[in-house]
Picture 1 (cartoon, rainbow, N blue to C red):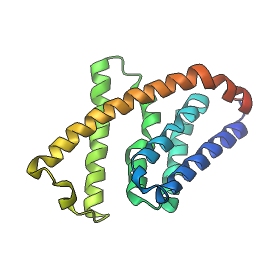
Picture 2 (spheres, one colour):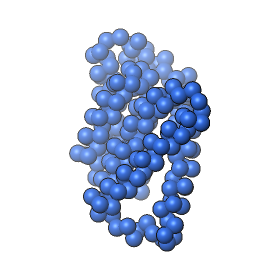
Picture 3 (cartoon, rainbow, N blue to C red):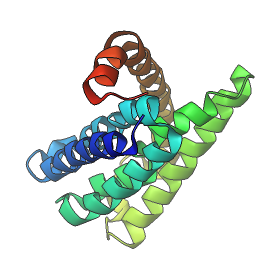
Length: 179
């Protein structure tokens, strides 16, 4: 497997991710959806080229997201969670104990949520009052709901990975002459 083919393949995926992140300016209601979709583009990179290439594409796309994305919060979501999680999913998938694996995933997600919230409030200037519609319980309720949605996302990501491996992997491998 030639590195030049890997570079070309990863470049195409990085360009597609950058285009998606650019679209956050055109579709402002997709602040979470577009970074999640852009992150899912790492699945083929990790399967075809390996983890190190996946994290490399994530790094490139993170920089491009901050340069090109009109929605800074969407870029933040990509950088702090959605961009690297499909690659990290492969690492966390090696944990044999299912309970420990889920706890590790939830720990990563909750750390990303807390960091994103703090950056949004203190650096991006999003007023704290915009998220206090349930009074003092709002952060706890939102965090519980976010964890439930994350578990759905994690399950959907697993399905996408299986779909890619079983249905698309051979065509991509042949097209780019990988492996």
